[in-house]
Length: 420
Image (cartoon, rainbow, N blue to C red; front, side, top):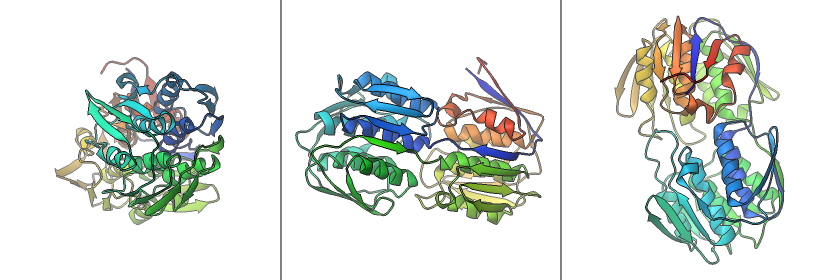
């Protein structure tokens, strides 16, 4: 098991390029199951979740050819309608394979998903919506088993603007009979990117990125050639890292329109943020001020950047209050920050962070994907050496981030096969 060692005190400066969005790439890759024609998906990140997805598609019978960040997939014939626990246990997004399989072959058996230990994240929203569209769904021994003849369009009111449920419904609705309307739909940029990919396959979709999405079903879809949008969470991570180390970092590929909630808070903290053509530049010349954040569905502050922003708050001037409204267990990194000397008080969904001038290096353990990278950021501003264990979480969503940070001036290295 690898670990990452960070020696603090370095100021991040220079240029960095973000990879394609993992959260956008995964549903688009699963959408290739909706057609028997060739699909090309470009700008996919080289991360563990994508590699698992491509393996799963291959196990189902799809032909997969990869050339760097581009992959060609043709699900000409599917030889299986089951996604086993062994493949889907490491990532929640794998559950999105259920809908396309159901729409394509009329049946699917998919293990209930795993992923980060940040909360229950039940799949009942997905299953109830599929039942409204005519599917028979049963949970049996840890698997969701679904069958359907011709799926039919429906009006679906989501109790919560779930990204996964919205993506699931959009894909299934493309091959359902009639029209589907999703009310209280998620509005994230990844939803818009999936809609663009589906539209290039011939789907009729209106309202992606808004609270109500309408899809007109078709008897079949064609192939696609689609480029995945840049990863806004990776971009936000580098912006926060640049700001909290009092550095000067230009993040190429970052889209300011997708990161306004983060940009607003960085400026409020005292960082200079410049929105460029195809890039964002952040700089800071002093210790930043504490700011309050509250995670919310898009366009609110993203839960996937909460841990990174808490890392910034640990060394900011004054007190910050971090409120997490999306996932119930997403403060596990706070305890690890305390091992580094952070002053944090936890009260349910709120964390009160009193900034200290400097953290102190220690051995810490990553609990999930975003916690992993937040501990690296904390290590950048800690005295001495910080060792982050269980960084396999990190590899699920960040493409060689230690190499990118090293090029920006971080003193960081990965140690292969470390214990812990």
